[in-house]
Length: 460
Ligand code: NAD
Ligand code: UDX
Image 1 (cartoon, rainbow, N blue to C red):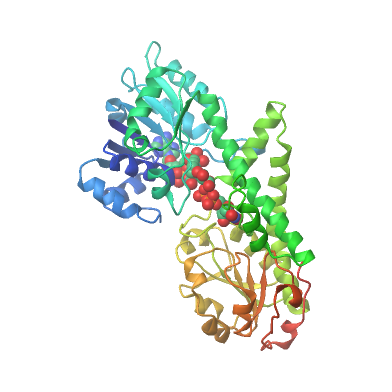
Image 2 (cartoon, rainbow, N blue to C red; image 1 turned 90 degrees about the horizontal axis):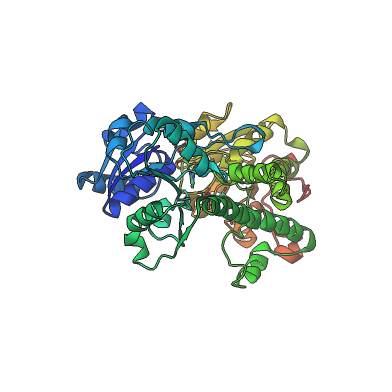
């Protein structure tokens, strides 16, 4: 099948390369000419494990190419996927201007019976709206608009696309449903469940799924706060909850608040949709507010742990990406927490295995280090914000030696207090009581700056 992918970003590139892998002939187009030039020259503009190889393989196999011209490829396509950004707009709504512009671009050249597939995340009613946009430009043309929401996660995008839990096809006519069923046949033959429904339901499934997953994260963050106050241990509590198959073990890791290009934007849009249609999504509304305050309260906690002499303290932040295995920093907790630390008078250095360049565009006054031990050199405190494997595997002896202080704040719970204590560091993590009795004795290494060894409240 001939497929055109409009938008060669995280979703468009992955989807394009994976559809080519399934045997389709795919052209990815993008208005960003530099991006297309780089792709045509063999460079992958984003970091996503396995994507480089998949693109190369399918390009060499003649199933995948790139173009800065939309009209030519769109005029020959059986299916035109729209995978452009739908960023946050005013009042929590999403900005549909990119996707509407893309629809206007393809309308004049689409051949009859083309199926336009909305891959971008869009609020309910958008497929209908795009139908009108195209129909206004092409009176009398027979075409379909379908919804095919994407559930991939960055960092495991290819695996998620090729082995999904389900495929959702939102179609208001048989032609669109049949085309998408055929397109995904190589996956559905492998037993992947497929849900065929109408476009409105498909649009709602995407938002409701993201909101529900985000609620799980917000809930476990709240439970972690409670654990700290009452001598609980969040890992044990989450595990005990998750073994109930109705709850499930995933998305129960506490952290510095959810970030990324999807959950924050999509939960806000879900709230805005609820308000607009007088069906308030008050649980999600609370979640959105709490996720914001979590970042500021965790920033305050760093300052509190440093004690009276926090001003002027040197802090090394490990992790700038919103999660591991991506270079994406969109709505990354690090971008909120670091400026708050700076405002409190702390000097910040940072390290990230992939996201330093992207983060540097949003931060000022932060020293970036390619080596994490160099970032930690003479630091009074180290703060882990992203769960990169490199950090899980870090040489604690070397880290302790490099630091001038002894405080290790781990907002991703990568270690145990016992392991950290062996290296004389003072460990602060999420969802564990500060009481040595409850969480295991922690012996602090004497800080080389004695004033920073002062005990600080574990929770603000
Ligand atoms: P992105 O910003 O990485 O990529 C969007 C691309 O579209 C950009 O390269 C941009 O230049 C291009 N573009 C914009 N207008 C265009 C046009 N008229 N013609 C051609 N190209 C155009 O965005 P993304 O992260 O890939 O997200 C795309 C959509 O998928 C969004 O709606 C998002 O909510 C949704 N989504 C994202 C993820 C994710 O993990 N990133 C997962 C599921 C769904
Ligand atoms: C998410 C959805 O999972 C995916 O289905 C959708 O297509 C796009 O949005 P993504 O944003 O790539 O994917 O990453 P995800 O793994 O869901 O993590 C989102 C945020 O939640 C990250 O900041 C992550 O660190 C945080 N998170 C996730 C937690 O804090 N705890 C968890 O247990 C899981």
